[in-house]
Image 1 (cartoon, rainbow, N blue to C red):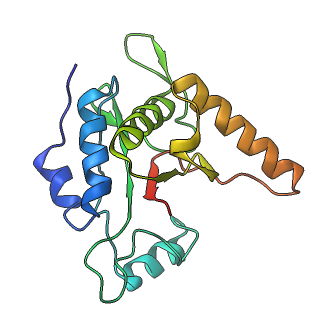
Image 2 (spheres, rainbow, N blue to C red):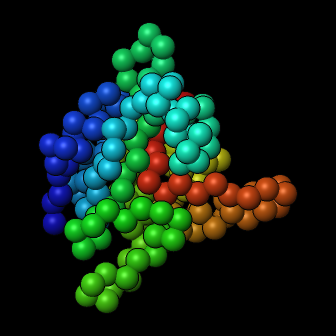
Image 3 (cartoon, rainbow, N blue to C red):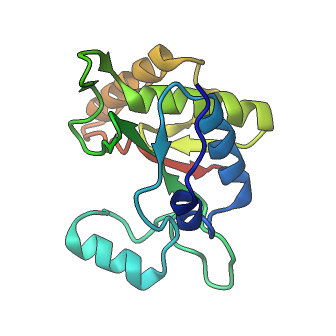
Length: 173
């Protein structure tokens, strides 16, 4: 199956770095899971401050913010469609479809994003594993799931908790 971004999703990504969009566009075409963009992906500082105030974001150091004097943000949130509905939230890492199949869309999306990022030489960080570049993880959805579990264990061992943001991808250094 070959998916592509809708005009609405592309409009929402007009100010995202073209390298990141090239990875996302190619990944969507190869993906077994349809995904899109639920909102404007690039933000001003004031828009990000409002998201933090409302509790839907935790940082003012967001890669969604277009830097002063810059043209592009360097992050996007890829949200899966499951049975034609955007599926986004902490409890959506494992989803049952209307047909009864159980899928884990964020691992599928991360795996295909990794595949394309490696092929294109674009370094990416994924919100499922903040302390490793996506490119450096082993391939495949099962490896993505194992990487998330390992990240959670590293955070717990360090006395913290893991921040999991499955839809989030950003350019890495």
